[in-house]
Image 1 (tube, one colour):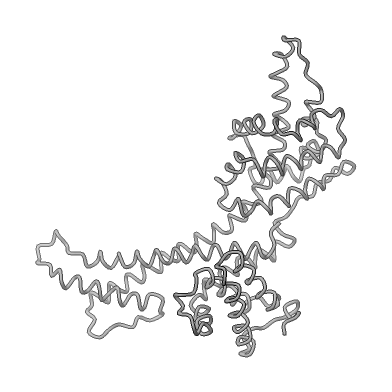
Image 2: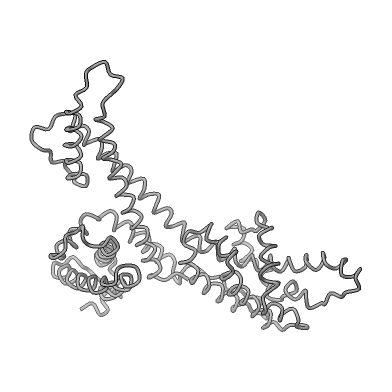
Length: 393
């Protein structure tokens, strides 16, 4: 399952992508200005290359000073060509950033949905391995019989696995398979290879196939082992998953927890299976997730100024990119989420800085957020209610 910390991490990563795209678009906009003032080799008129070069230099300087401003402050005696180039470059920059932000937000949300897709895909893979057991036995049966060898009934244990049977007959789960289009049909050769080269060779699986009439508990345990030791650990499978999910390594721990809870919940008497949601309250968490990203992007300049005002000994450009993103996210959370206590926000972003930024970031982020929160509360900008009032002193 995803918790708020996991969601903050995903927002931080998305904002980092936004920053990198903005940096790239900044350079593209300057290239755009250079193109405007590139001599036209097809023109019949004489080109003043020195003037064009100077115009490009002036336009890029004005652009650099104004690309994030609401109103362009021009230098004295700026000619119409330069003004037009700057205006067009700013529009070009902003349109590209807008497209990138939209794409990154969509990708961020899809990445979360990938976790659910992988959850159902993993449960479906258990069923596929069960089917491969039967197919494997059927292929071997004739050959072994001709050689006078025997196939033991226990080799079909996974096919007859009582927990697998409940998975196959659970309407709610089958509906989710349909909703997510969960299928291994296009990857049957991969599944066969994983079954043959990984599962069949696993010691825990060999032990399971030697049991006569395994108990329901045995059936559940082997499914848990397949998830932990094969699906989530086997290099070939994890590489396959990583190709379809850029955040596979990060999502793996949440997926492990989700699969474990579902498998442990399978009840022989009631035929019940607990299908795990993305979080305990995904409706609220989803809003938090989307709003934290959107608010931080929309108010980026305002939040950067708040941070800069307290970074007296640090030029803004000297603050590590990740630290700046973390600080702006924290400010966004303090100002826009009344139900989250300030102390919780500060502690969460200190943790992010410990795990994702530089060695000294924890101390820097802690000191900055303490000062910022005191000032914002004094100015009446932080307004908390309900749970947000807890320890908010």
